[in-house]
Length: 316
Image (cartoon, rainbow, N blue to C red; front, side, top):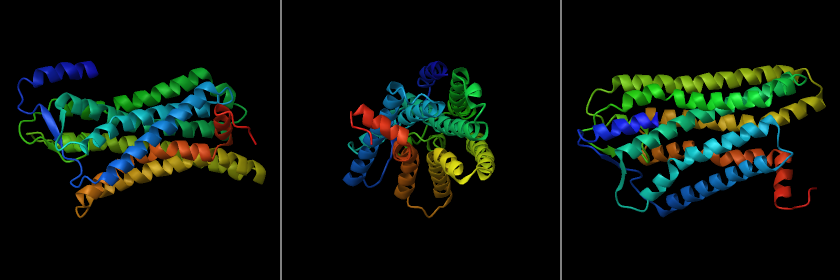
């Protein structure tokens, strides 16, 4: 897919007047915003790297749940690294430019990682469903082969779902304005700069975006409805133990989908200040990756114990 894109870009650059885009970013470049976002990015890399390290090195974190969490942390790191460093550099220069090729590569990775993250949350919900609703068959179902298959399907879902929108965006001619009114190469912000009708692009991109969000949300919801029915039939002690294994994931899911809804609303309300809208968009892209490690670590004793073992701290 990327090879096709690079071949296309070398041909199109010779015929189009726009070869780079100017990222407008924030109108008021406050130092405090730079500091806040830089701190968040460092915490994202540190927290998610720690989870990946613990899962890969600690022999007691070999259950499927941690395998899926490890993949979610990896995708979160890619997701934020595609945009945040570029955004931070915009605070340090007067005019932030990005080549046309670089802009579309950023767009491809950002969209695919956003969808992949939703798919991984769905896989984790399915894992909790099997563990709670079918505990006796869990080990025989969630084999190593099935785990790798689920991860492969999650990543495949993320990459294939963006193909229609990107296939329509790549051939667009850009021959006039080149100022992207965003902090990175956002798909909608870039497509509206094309010097041709983009109605079909908007319909296709919105359709597949809604499909990605709604389909994964419904699968997660179905998993938790089944989990809720099973837990309601348990005794109080078993009920608390089963619910505790789901709380962290449920919190992450709520944060992810609520923040997505806030971004959607901010772009539909005309009275929103442009900088406020951009801040909401940034928070949407960093909030879940930032909070994931803390939510899972604070609410998971096995991860806490693994962290103590990693730093040679005696376990309580």
